[in-house]
Amino acid sequence: MLHMVDAVFLALSVLTIGSAIVALEIRSLIYGSIALMLTLSGIAGFFLLLDAPFVAMFQLSVYVGSIAVLILFTVMLVRRELIFNKIEDKRRRYAGIGLMLALMLGIGMIIIGSGMKSMETNSASVDYKKIGADFLTYYSPALIVMALILAASVVGALTLARREDITSDQRTD
Amino acid sequence: MTNGLIDFVLVSVALLAIGIYGMSVKRNAIRMLFGVEMIINSANLNLVAFARFIPNSQGQTLALFSIAIAAAEVAVGLALVIVAYRMYKNIDIEDFRSLKG
Image 1 (tube, each protein chain N blue to C red):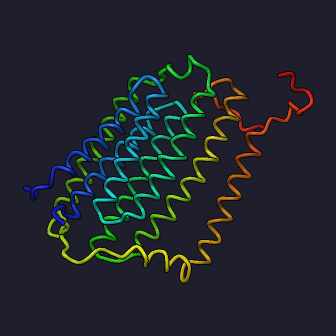
Image 2: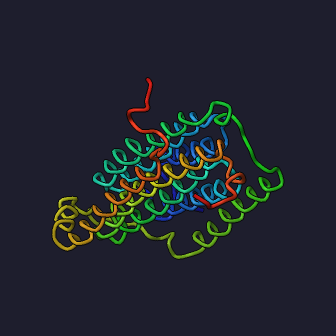
C-alpha cells in the first residue's frame, strides 16, 4: 500500500480530477470552461505543494487569467443552442471510457510497480532566483525565440480571425 | 515533504487519461481544446514534480517555456475555431469537411 498523503494533497487531487471530468461532461460549455478554470487552479496548487511558487503564479496568470478567459469569450461568441447542444456517438463514448480506464490502470500499475514508490526527498527546494538568472543567461536565446513565437502566434490569430468582407466604413452600428 | 513523487505522477496520469478521453470522444471543437489543455497540464505537473525530487531547476524552466507555448497554441486554436464557425455555422468537427479557404 502507498504511504499516507496529507489532506491538502487529497483535496487538491479531488478538485483537479473532479473538475476535469465536469469540464468535459457538463452540458453547458460556459460552466465547462469555468470547471476547466478550476482544474488549472488545482494544478497551480500542486505547483505550490512542490515548492515551485514561481511556476504556480505563472500558471495562475497565464492559464487562469488569460487562456481560460479567452476560451470563455470564444464560447460566448458561438450561437446559443450550440453551447447547450451535446453531440456524441454512444458507442464511441463507451469505447472512450474504456480507453481512459485502460490507460489509467495500465500506466498506473506500471508506475506503482516501478521503483518510483520509494522516491522521497529531504533536500531543500530550488531557489526561484536561480530560475530567473537562468532565463537571462543560459536560456536567453530560447527566451528570445519564445517571444518571437508568441508574437507570430498573435499575428497569426489576428490574421485568421479577421473578416475581409467588412471594412470599417461599411459598419452601420 | 510528506508527499512522494509517485502521488504527483499518479494524478498526472489520471489527468492525461481524462484528456485523451475528451479528445477522442467529443466532437465539439472547444471541448477538444479542453482535452488538449488537460494533457499539457499533466505534462507540466510531471516536469515540476520530477524537478522537485531530483532536485534541479531545469524542470521548472522547461515548464515555464511549455506554459508560454501553450498560450500561443490556444490563441491560434481558438482563432481556427472562430474561422470554422464562421464558415460552417457550427462547431461540430464532423461538419468541417473541406480544407478549402
